[in-house]
Amino acid sequence: MSIAYPLLRPLLFSLDAETAHNATLHGLDFIHALGFSRMLGQRIECEPRSVMGIRFPNAVGLAAGLDKNGAHIEGLADLGFGFIEIGTITPRPQPGNPKPRIFRLPSAQGIINRMGFNNDGVDKLIENVDRANYKGVLGINIGKNADTPIENAADDYLICLRKVYTRATYITVNISSPNTKNLRQLQQSDEFDSLLAQLKAEQTLLADKYGKYVPIAVKIAPDLEPPQVQDIAAKLVKHQLDGVIATNTTLSRTGVESLKHGNEAGGLSGAPVRAKSTRVIRELATALDGALPIIGVGGIFSATDAEEKIQAGASLVQLYSGLIYRGPDLVGECVRALR
Image (cartoon, rainbow, N blue to C red; front, side):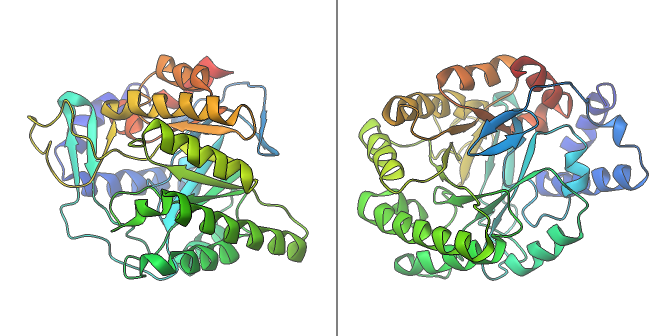
């Protein structure tokens, strides 16, 4: 694959970004079905890591957003990830925002998306997970439907939490996408406090019901000021959440505003968000003081970038945009660096 992807990338980049995204996923499925999975990922001997009470085969995971419906888990697993996170999923299916809604910024190694939680609904995701022959660590990322009033957002999260609980190794609560109106309001103190209290209470009930404790992590934005990060950390500790994922995409356009598509609406990911993400991780690590683990994501394009996230305080890392630009070899490169 180290030879193939540099040859394939110009072809994929000649396509509309969302078309290329879907073609790549179906291509992974095809290669997996043919039994050629060894072509894709490198199997590297690693010492497993225990984070959130879960044994991770290696420290490098796939971030949510690439496989929203959990329809391509086996093909993605072939790339050598230590864990895979699917979603964001909502209670009811929704189409997301009008197309086009993904834009590449190649000279900045960035991507802007305003997908808007397009997905087939939580019931379809469960069907896909049940059908997949995947025994690894699976995170399921949950959100709210776009037409659910923000004051009723907790209802949507609780519906998804109940439905995915027995299928997930851990569950991520996405309150930081910039593409669902007012969603980031849930990161504010009172709303955040209320949401965490309800999620924790439901997690306790579900753990008793199923005899299985499934950790809950919260995914936050990179556009938070230090006092906001400190407040979020305090609330996570207060309600005994199990982890925090830092970070989602940024609304900032610093450094890309003059580029083609640089001012498209949506969240910016890739290299332009790397420093902002690392800053939030470092501030979280200080505020949390080891009380719960951090999963670092945002702008990882090399082993050095992955190591930077760990040194800032993350226990694990996740990839997404780096895969688009670097291809599957990035996974093995990061795994080797962090083993």
